[in-house]
Length: 139
Image 1 (cartoon, rainbow, N blue to C red):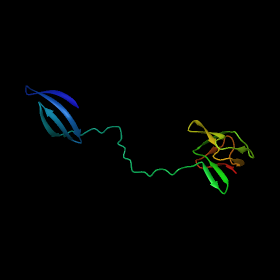
Image 2: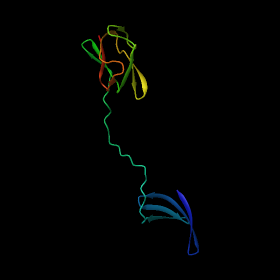
Image 3: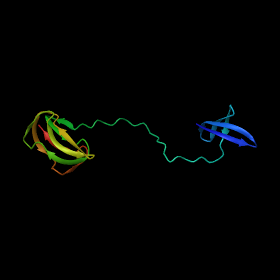
Image 4: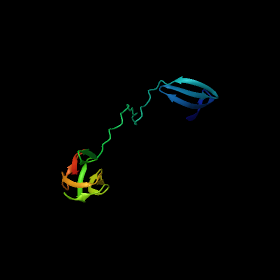
C-alpha cells in the first residue's frame, strides 16, 4: 500500500503498510511483519457504502394487452405525447408507428403490436401520460 522511512532515536526503519482493516494494520518493518492497533480515530470516507437488499425482478410491463379481440396500447413510461401517425378508424399492421412520445428527453415511437383498426384514441397531442396509462385501443 504505502512505504515509509522512519528514523527513531537514530535508528532507520523501512515501514511498508500492507493493509488496513478497521483500526488494525498489517505492517512490515525492516522485513518483519506485525499486526498493529491504530489508536487515532479513523476518518470516514465521503463516499457512502451501498448496501443493497435482494430485490425481486420487476414485473413485465407490456404495452400490449388483449381483452376479447381488443388490443389496449399503454404508455411504457411517463412522458408527453408529441404526435400521431394514425387517426381513429385507420387500419394498422403489426410494427406500424402509431404515435411519438417524449420520455426522459428522448422521442420514443409507439408501435402497433397487432393488425387491426384503431377503435379509439384516449390521449391528445401535448398531453402528459403516466406509465400504464391507456393510449389507444385497436380492434
